[in-house]
Length: 142
Image (cartoon, rainbow, N blue to C red; front, side, top):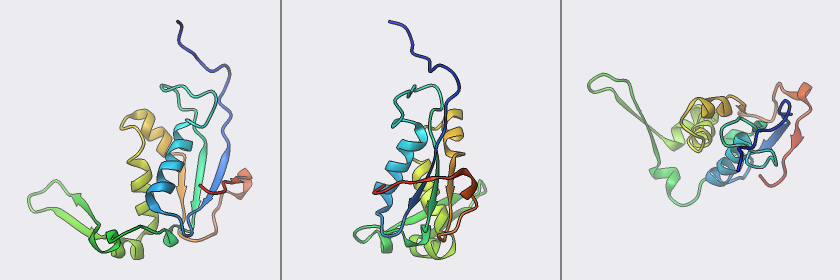
């Protein structure tokens, strides 16, 4: 059995996903699947066949249960005593796009290929985005 290689250049589409009222994990897994190209019939694990995704209204994302009160994000500076901690609600107020980026990129491979996939993700706080020239398709029920 031989290895499949997609012929020609990979045609990439642009999608817009509205995060208003969506659950964080479910939205993140759907977007990660599109970024990795697993929805593409020409999917090949070692080639980046994914599409571009623009997520809007990141500040209106929902999470279930008590996670809004209990979830914390950690960052270590590399120095002794440099562990930083931020609660979900504070981060949602300060930088909601970072919450979605972290969740989505955490579902992608941890390699050069995963970084390339993550580079096709654009997350914006409000409903406006600068990618109208690419004529993105609206992705319903993401």
